[in-house]
Length: 116
Length: 114
Image (cartoon, rainbow over all chains, first blue to last red):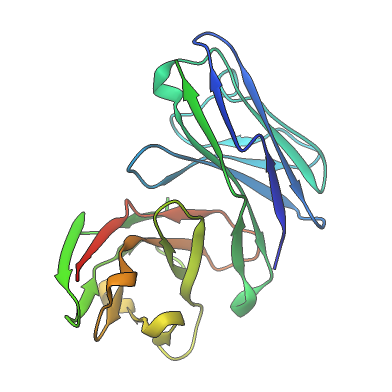
């Protein structure tokens, strides 16, 4: 298994401000993933955070809005920039461990963001 | 690109009824398939996963899923549901390789009447 710690667990932010979410994994992983789960909806992949290179963003997500850092193999941050109420969501950090049959995704507890 | 479709948005059943939740995926290569459950206010938990071999996969809490390659399906089943099965269920797919991103379906909300 993997232990993933996310901070903060929740926050209430003002429109137009930015919030940086931290994700710490208990051991080294090649890729870390950032998801968004909007109220009552599924998980949508925002980007893949690669160590030593720029993050890879999914369609509909851009670096200016969601800058990501990946300074080492156990840590990543996601910033939600210039927030609006539409950004209110749960943001989740995830890693995938193992190979073949042992492959499994592990998730942090999430950051519940409310933008007012 | 990979995608996952879950046909049922909200399913309501009585206790002891049988359950089947549909999941279809779109990807031309070899895939790994998952079902996750999210109980109210809790994190995602892995119910079961398929990688290769026997297409009928058994998971925790009496759940099972069948991989039908020709139909690109991975439906979740349970013979007799309980009130405690009330939750959101997500089907997910990833390419058959390590550390590949996981794509989730839209989810199915399951409500069980006591």
